[in-house]
Image (cartoon, rainbow, N blue to C red; front, side, top):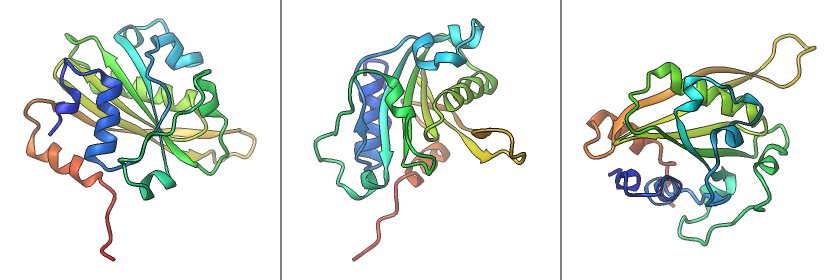
Length: 193
């Protein structure tokens, strides 16, 4: 089921295949190149063990309303290759969800806190829309995102990045039936016509 993420597979390509083939989304691909932790996390990068555990980061692309309507077999739309910043310049109404893939040190057995810190950093850095992150560490993967809400006080700009939701420690070779069921439920509902 998760052959997209085996250690012999490029994580960015595996993430694209997972969203396109398994979930049926037409992902608008951003770039195939990898980024360092400092590049992908931008101003949120810290010289800490969490960020040092990142081997590579990928901007997989985005899923918008049209992505859910188009068949996934369409040729991918590529974004401008100039940089990650274009993804951040979107209107406030969330026209899309940004997809990132992070390769962690394979020997690492990350705790929830480490993945939450990295997920929160990406969601703070890329204010234009919510971020979903796929982490891979050895033969294990995780899927994470944040809740977002407006600040209650009017003088604060932007949004409050809230609770991190993580589907943790998914065995790529033998996923637990509960993990399989959750991943299956991520597919958009198809209505009979």
